[in-house]
Length: 338
Image (cartoon, rainbow, N blue to C red; front, side, top):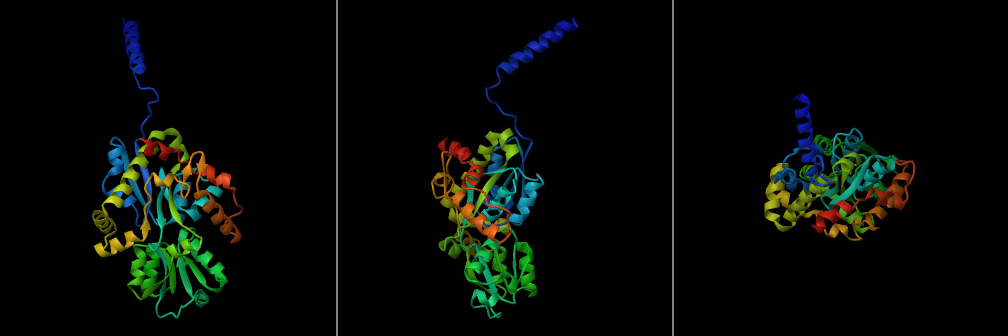
C-alpha cells in the first residue's frame, strides 16, 4: 500500500513539473540595492516603491552608500546585488576584477557636483590651493576631477593637503573651519555654500573640457547569472523612476525634498544640476550603445583609467574591449523593447 501511495505521489509531482513554464526562474528571497547619497531618479524609484511593484514577492532592502570608494568596498564584501558607481570607481573596480557588470546610466553629472572654496581663503585660481587643506571622497568622480584639474593647471597635488572624507564628514569639517576647499556633491555641498563658501568649479564645466562624469548602475555577476529576469525587473523599475522624474518635475522635487530632508527650492535646484537619460536614449552611441556596438562609455572608462594609472592609482590600463565587456546593454535592450 505504501509503495502504491509513493508511486502515485511521484506521478503527481512529475505531472506538476511538466506544466511548469519553460525557462521559469527561481525568485530571490531578497534583493539588496546599494544607492549613492546623491540627487538622481533612484530616490524616486525608492520613494514610490517601484522596485516592490516590479518584484512583488521579493523583500527589497535599500542601503545608502556614501561614495564610490564605499560602494566598491560593499561590492567586494558581497553586501549588495545592485549598486551605482561613477566612472573613476568603475574603472578601478573593473581593473581590479570585481564581479560586476554595467547595465544602465543612473545619471550624468553637472553642477550637482562641484568644488567649493572658502570665500575668505583668497583662492582665485587653482595655484592658490598650494598650502591649503582640501577634501574629497577618494575614488569618487570628484576626487578624479580634482586631480585632473590640478594636472591641467600644472599644480602639484603634493603642494596641498588633500583629505579623504565622506560627503557628510566634509560638511562637518567645513562648518568647523577645518578645510579651505572641497569637491563633493549635493545635498551636503549646499551646507558648505551656505556657510561661507562659493562654487569655484563644477563637474559640468569639466565635462565641457572633455572630462565627463557619470554614474552607472551595476549588478553582481552571480546575481545576474542566477536571476536574469530580476535584472530586467530592476531596470524596469529604475526606468519608470527616470520617466517619472522627466515627466513630473514638481512632484519629483517634492520627493527629493522629502528623501533628503531639504527645502523644496534647494531640491529643485539640485535636480536641475543632474541629467537623467531616458532608457531608450541610453542605448545610443553617446552612452552604453548596444550589444553589438558598445558606446562612448567604454572610451570614457579608458580615458579615466589612463589618468588614474598616470597618478599611480591603477596598476595598469585595460583595453577598450575589456571595458566594453563590462558593459551589458542587453538587459536594457529587452526592457526598452517590451
